[in-house]
Image (tube, rainbow over all chains, first blue to last red; front, side, top):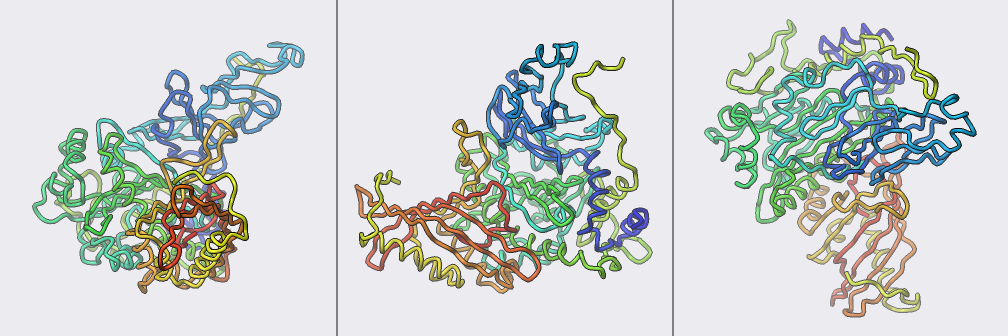
Length: 455
Length: 176
């Protein structure tokens, strides 16, 4: 495999089918994509109190995400610097220290090495092992936005805010709905025999699959919206390192009635009006578009939908964030959170949770059919004929490479927007992927512990 | 749910026998996709819940998450799930999985204050799809509340304690 041939094809909207299940490609992705991208690992509300922690992965790296006794957040490599054991083997909890079960080396929850048994007898004290100032290996770069904690394994990672760019405008629709911030519940975690890229690409812009893949949820009247004609009125936008889909609201909706149309009660609309800029409010209020699915490169996706949650016909929206955590070329762990404004009325939280459970997550009726498709793609992508097949990712372009419709002028958000069906966003995603896999992995110097630091 | 008596009913007790048979018949309906008939075994007040489990430090933390579930169902949502399976477009179960619910470890408790039964059981669901991927299994404990009615027992409440923190099945297009 020549990776430059792969990216040339991908940039041209032709995807070598085997990219969805190939060990060599997966190794390249580990070295070149996940080792230097900004990766979502947790939300602050998952560790609300001092000394709370969760353990999360970036592919094979186990990371301890803590809030120390002073409230500060730390992200550390969950590996004892002595013999390499995980210092924390639970997945969440509350602890002021982490003691390695192997030799009892003990770390404070800010990572500082606090206890080293027989330091004097075994090492001759500081003369043999420099304990002072040692700590668990910190994640090279950490950034927090709207309470979302991101980490990069690349010490030279580009500044988070610069990287996020105009995607931040859209991020707020999902993760900033109240001055009180958001509450993340979960995640539900499950594994599926699917390549991680497929979910990311689906959520970034595939409004084309909705009417057919999800036909059943319309038939049972769970959801009125994903009808082919309705779906193609939506705008596909991409901005910065991500993109997403929208639904067109009824003409002349305005901000408040647009949000009301998808089921937000007045109390929630008041909160959103408090935290969204006039430009953000104009997306629904003037342009008339309601954000639906989105992906932030590489593997964090968002969904916002509004099913009917009971027999009375009540429509209630929900938000979910999901991480397509790569396990192997043909296997992904899906982590799916329910997200709601922390100070939302209890009745709204309950209805929104129900809306989420009906639609997405491990048992969600949308998600069930999505994952079935993705498992099927991944299984088939292993074949030798898949090594020849170039999948067509050119929807919305003529053979000459011109868009079949011009950019949508009435869209008020930043970035690039097209109305109707198209694979503009999937190509955008693949162009970001190509930019990374074309570059050799960062070369990082080893870090030795306990030995005097070279000056 | 009232706390169960410490000692389960003896196997010879007719109430235990009825409860055991209920669970076996229910498993048969689920294995053979008789979902309408399965709904018929549920009381309209049904609360059907499967909390998310996590890996937690022994003795100091709960391994069951209180705020997130894999299922948190009522009569409306279970009926919608069944209705969906009956459409021609529920792709995830067409072709269908081959399912076998293995039910065991049934312990029946009489409720002191009412004639309802509290029934604990283990269920192992074997699920095989297609001809390429490995089959998946889900192991769980269940704690049910069964109400005696003129038409037989009805399930009013089920709490499912799933034995995994990360489910090894592609979705929960199944019932436990």
